[in-house]
Amino acid sequence: MAQQQDQVPQQEQTQQPAPAAEATQAPAAQPQQAERKRQSHQPQRRGGQQRDRRDIDEGGVEASVVKIYRCAKVVKGGRTFSFGALVVAGDRKGNIGMGYGKANEVPMAVEKGTKDARKSMFKVVLKGTTIPHAIKGRWGASSVVLAPARPGTGITAGKSVRPILELVGITDILTKAYGSTAPKNLVKATLDALRQLQSREQIEKIRGVQLEAGASEFQAR
Image (cartoon, rainbow, N blue to C red; front, side, top):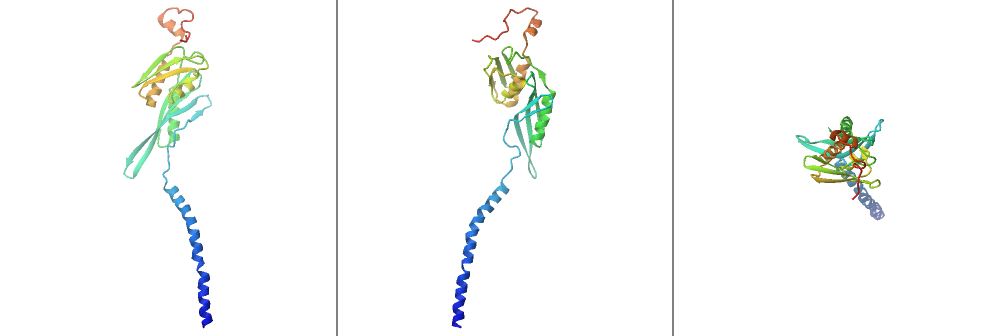
């Protein structure tokens, strides 16, 4: 009986390390479970960050997204989101247009805005890689001044004005924006300035005069 009593504690001692092994495995599993729980509860961003999206169709017309707007509507069950896309389209050959599309998803809003921009395209008077003369466009509280530049100058413009000038086919120009910096107003003010551009022949026809040689040439100061 004494031998049996001695064997029982030995068996208990041999079985005791098992909980210690489980304890060593538990901390390793806890970080994985915590990471999975954090990922499951992490909110997904439907809109995402603004990116430079450009699409080219078969006709050579490129579309660039200027700004993505997100609107949140509070309803009984929570919040619903809708998105708006400000898009400009051009063929880099003097044609440019602007469009705005709204939808519940960003791709659909961009697609609607692109279609609207291609419908509203118009012809712009250019002179080589720049514009024929300085011009100022206005829209709302924003105004944009465009000035011609020498070849090799590049495009000096902000993030809202630059896509328009690139897609219209201008590579050398100086710009300055005044007033409100809202992307919609800046885009429309830039388009207003491009619509006012006139060639030498158009000015001679409107005024009924013959301009001197070099009167419309860009003079550097």
